[in-house]
Every structure is written in structure tokens, then in C-alpha cells.
Image (tube, rainbow, N blue to C red; front, side, top):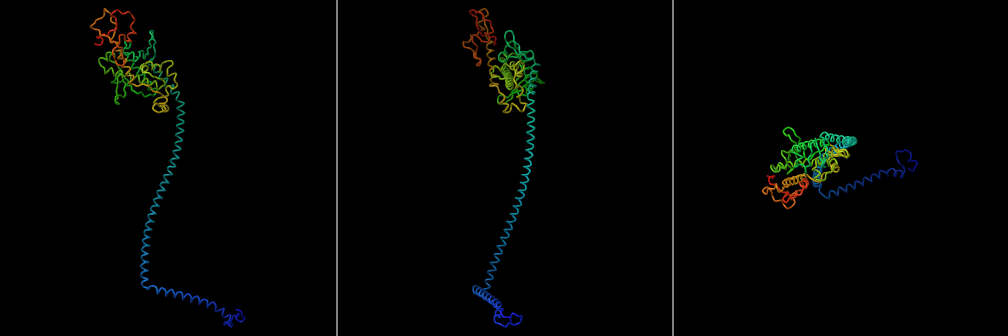
Length: 422
């Protein structure tokens, strides 16, 4: 208000300007209301002109109901999917919990295994150190037991004035399997006794050393008065051979060839056992002839002054009864060697030697006075082949060396006597 009169608190307005100012707000509100009214009237008119009111409401209602049904179906599907998802989530949670539990168990087990492994390694190290400290005393004890067993059996060597060397066990000569089986110096009782004592000594030594023999030896017992030896031959069948002779080999070869062959196989198995035993303790035997000299091999291994049991530091260390140098392991096989010949080579060598000695024994020197043309056979002209079992020549080598040289008469010669072979 610009007049002093109107500024007073009067119920009426007296000037034009004051009246305009007071009415301006009401006029403005009226204009805005009228404008909104016109706009609403225009929209209603436009809607009424476009489509009928009833049809529009029905169609719209159907569309809305259809949309509502679709939304409800979608809601049901979403709820089902949510339920399945929740089930999968629960299953995954359970699986994760189970896996977490197993992982914790495995981790705990790994910790326990590490602890147990450490304890086992420490215990193994302690036992190995203890074993290493016991290896030498154990080997010395085995050597002592083996030498004592050889001493109890009085295994020794005897040098005769003739220059021949004999190996005795219990005072009985041990025959050389190539040269002494048909000799007169080694009778049947002597051969049987020496083989029995040698088999028993071999069993004791193999037991003390913890060696598994390739061919098992059966000592005399109830129902078995003589020692025997067995092995796997002929298509993996176990064969048992007696280490016993009932009569001389020369007679046995003629009367019972099968028994002769079995005895040769038995002594060959025994020789192979001794050769392998010597090899396992560091005493090498590389020739079949050397393996057949069983007395020398056992004497050299146990009873000689420079025997393997005394001079070889490895004696008694390798065996089948220890874990460090076990003959069945790669380390044990690398530490020891085996003979470069087999059991069959020994059998063939002994068989051919015995055949040659049997053929040579059929020949003798006959003088003019002793000669009887009916008892003589014309001697062969070729030399014998011990391996082929052929006939002997005019001068058999074994007999020629044992017979004193003398001047033969016109009829004196090496002559085969029929009566000696029957």
C-alpha cells in the first residue's frame, strides 16, 4: 500500500492502487483454475470423440485380466523356479559343507601322516644305524658258526705222498664228482657216508648264513633213512633224487640206467647248491670242473687257513634272512654274482665223464700167453669222444697213465675184453 489511509487497519479500501494489489492474488488463482478447467474439458471431449465409452471399458478390462493371468502364471513359474533354485542352493550348501568337512579331515589326516611319517623315518633311521652297528658282529658270528660246524665235521685236507690231495669229512674222503665215483679208493659206503655228511654240513651252513638253497635237501628221518635232494625240473614238476648208492656206479649203469641217471642228477644238484652258496659269499666258481670238486669248494669256503670265511669281509653279510643286503632284492643281486653255468651242464659233464671211464675200464693189456682170440674184440682205430660215448682208442688215456711202461711183445696191446661187459 502506498497511501497512509489504506495502511491503517481499516475494513475498507479507499484508493485504487491498494485495491488492485489486494485483488491481484485472487485474480491469478482464478486464471489458473480456469485454464485447468479448459484443459480437462478438452481431454474429455477428445476421449469421447475417439471411441465409445462402454466398449473401451470392456476391452480394456479383458486385456487387463489377461495380463493379470499371464502375470500370475509367470509368478507361479518364478516361484517354482525360485523353489528349485533354493533346493539346489541348499544341496550345494550341504555338498560344500561336506566337502569342507572332508577337506578338514584330509588336512588333519595329512598332518597326522606327516607326523607319523616323521616318526617312522626317525625309527627307520635309528634301526638302520643299529643294524649297521650289528652287521659286522652278525657276520663274524655267522662266520664263527660256519667254521665251528666245519670243525665239528672235521672238514680237512690231506696230502698223500703220491701227490694226490684228498678232502675229508668225518675222516671219510669226499669224492670228486668227475674222477672218484668209479674209483676203487671210494667204495659205495664211503660215497654214501661222505654225501650224507656233506649234505648235513651244507644244510647247517645255509641255515647259519640265511641262504635259501635252489635245490632243497631232505635229511634222513622217519621213513626216509637216506638224504635226498629235490628241485623243479621237466615242465615245473618237483623231482626228488636220493643221495644214496646201492651198488657201484659201473654196475648200476648196466643193470639200472634210470637209477644211475637219478643219482647223477642228485649229485649235480648238490654241486650246484655248493657253487651258488660259495658265489653268494664271494668265492667265485666259474668252471664246471671246479664245481664238481665239492670237497675243495667247501674246504676253501670254511676250513682253509685262508678260507673265505676268514679273509672275505663280505662273508655272512648277504643272505635271504636280512633286509639290507637281501639276495632277492636288486641291491642284493647287484652285490653278489651267480655261476655262469647251470645244473644241466654239470649233469652232462658228469655223465660223459662216467661213460668215458666205463668204456676205458673195458680195455686191458693182454700178453701172448694170456691172449684168447675168442675173448678179444678188434680195437677201434679212432680216438674216443667222451661226449658222444664212443669206443676208446688203442691207448686209453686214464689207464695209460696208471700202468707202468714196459716193452710189449708182438701180441701185447690194448685189447677190449668181452667178459667185462658180460
